[in-house]
Image (cartoon, rainbow, N blue to C red; front, side):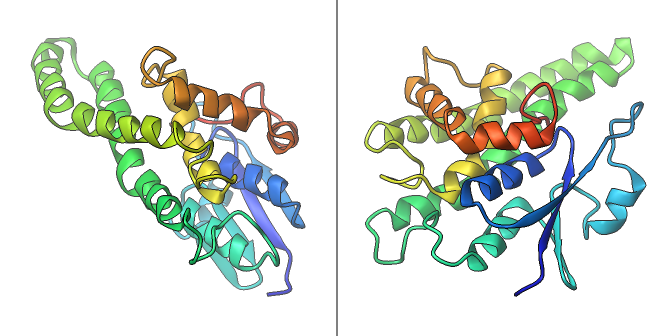
Length: 228
């Protein structure tokens, strides 16, 4: 595919990790930055019109308009010759890479989103309803969300204690995909040095990559552009 890839980058969104990986790869691309609505914080209409789902991230390339972070990143890797961010099928790190590649979006992201949505929704309810909903949310968190989050983060800790990256011995696309989850998780107190020292050390390794600095500069925001 010879057409230039365009990343339609929405501020404070998951598209930052696509921008970050593109900077790491050094592959040519065009960047168009969109601002959220000042009142609703939603994507502008012109952005929604491009995305098949009306959500970030989205890339276009020729006649292709592609949404979903992992699909976009696979598409980029498929069209980047000699890239090293995806272990070969014969690599001993392949199974580990595949697990985190799919667990990030299939397990970790839904749990983190549920946690945030439930917390925020309580604040929007009438005052008299909050005590009842609070009990429901606490029960859902303790019985369903938190146990599963804990198991996933425990596995992340265990894996990072044996190799420095989520893809094994070498930096991989899985690291850029899960970066959103872990960095935002640390910002929101879901991950901390006392319980997740290897995860916190991994975050520092990721932020030390030159591609993080260049992606942050192109993002143009005071923070790294991550938000739920």
